[in-house]
Length: 236
Image (cartoon, rainbow, N blue to C red; front, side, top):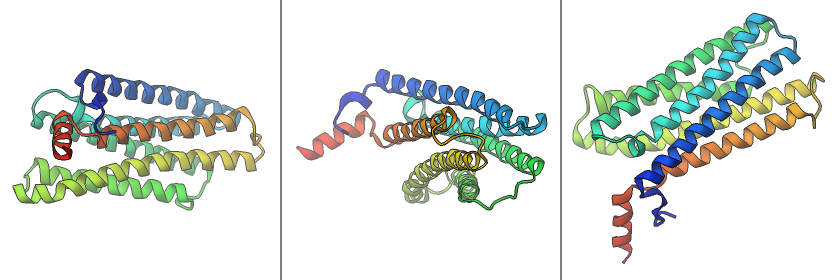
């Protein structure tokens, strides 16, 4: 897989990134309409509808910005410092949107008299936000300002990459578990049937999110052109 020239060509790499962005935005539009549809179907108040809509919108935008940030080093032209700045800024925007989404979810629960933090989905989401914030703060302190020593950055980099991929995978899993939770709650309340259009739609949306996660992680772990030549040379 790593010997394939697919990821070594800048134009094809840019094309793959564009496809991922388009794929993410399509998912976002679908979720926007699905949030409004579910709110209307469940007869949720205007304030709750806005909170529910904002939470779904911002949490998926969080994934979108995470996609772009994770791929910044492979898709953004320019110096390493510029790529690092873009990566850092996009992750900050992702964290900001995530906090707005969390606030909207909290307000929605308060409006609907729903308990907080009692499901696996909520625990996963809170864990993801805490890890994501710590990851960003550690990366900013070590790789940007004030910056660690060369040896310190070198020893932390593999762990930074690992936890970045782990947090992204956790964010995808949290989103999918949220769809599952909502589907089960609505089926239990007889709002939708097990094989209804809404249930099949949420299942399909979950599968699309998993495919998105797989494509992004594949793009991350695939080496750049120089590394591919290194692998080829070491195997000969």
